[in-house]
Image (tube, rainbow, N blue to C red; front, side):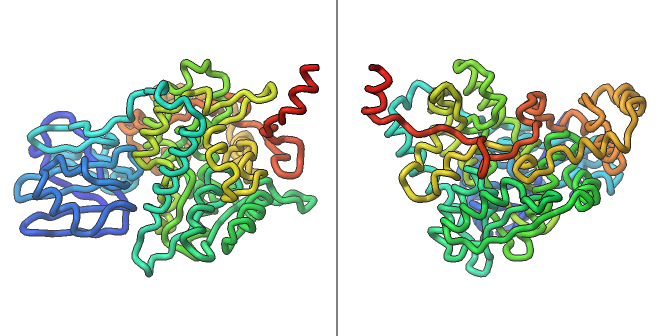
Length: 488
């Protein structure tokens, strides 16, 4: 969707937002509301709230949304706190345009395009106003493990159940890769939805062995009793999907593109059965789940987590939204409930990454919170963290293709000709070349998110054996007898 308004109504340098959704235009007593929203937004609610609260109405919305509200000659626009839903604005001649996707701007011939900031609203009178920011770090508050586990468990179960609310005719499912995050979401949802549809994708090698996520998801789905669906894709399928993914993703960041391809296949599979799916996005940011974070000293760990949460809007959340919308599928993200984000900033870093028997366990306190609850079997609850691509078995396919299709000379030329773009590898240059075929605006380059974790080898390496191999967390506590014998 793309909308144009006279530029003079938007004085000065500006940004604006809109978003994809289940809702269409709303109206009430002369108000016109252009809304694309997700979980937490109710048709007819936003305009009444605006009448009562004015622009502050956004502070009373709980969920993912973006909207443009027109009240006679006045208007406001807003985007949800974390930026789960996308929005762009741009200038062309005497008009200001806003759209939910960069591609709409390209089709309209809009050259100057910018991203609307998350957690902001705009009015002609006030300009851009930040109504939300990721909470400040207060990680001295929760030090008791049992209390912290109770709070995590209660808050997260509420967050999942809240996102199950939908019209009875709207089928809801869940991603279930067999990793901690999506499996935990699916397990809680399965308590509320009998025969919940769950989805996983992966690859099969020449010996017929399937990737780790396929194996893990089978264990998780059997435990929670879901109606489980698998899709196996080939290298040819991957290569054919890649240009489509980059066009729709609207990014050339290697880590984002890599993860977007299996996400594309998962959404394609899910769309055959449901119109809404829950995902585990956000858990790694809240609970420091990336392996590169283990390099950080504890006093810097929550600072990095807070930075990552603030950057989700144009990285992982952009991937989830774009791939879902390509198949008219709405993705909901319970980990990014505001209460969960707030809670995460109160948890000490030594409870997030826990040193145990000489090794570091990522997301330790989240795992601990659901230990002995029977939501998940231990082999899933304590499964070693792998990236989307690693679990699906396709982590190196994009890089291989890039090296086949692009020379070192062409890489260096593309890098030199585009100094504002971050192009640090032949793979990035290959993706950038495809990206520019569909999105030629120079102005948007500054809004493209680049994931810094991709600079660390452990986030890129081939990973196998998290289910039937030796790559497992040693999480069990020693009993008193074992401790005594060691001491003796």
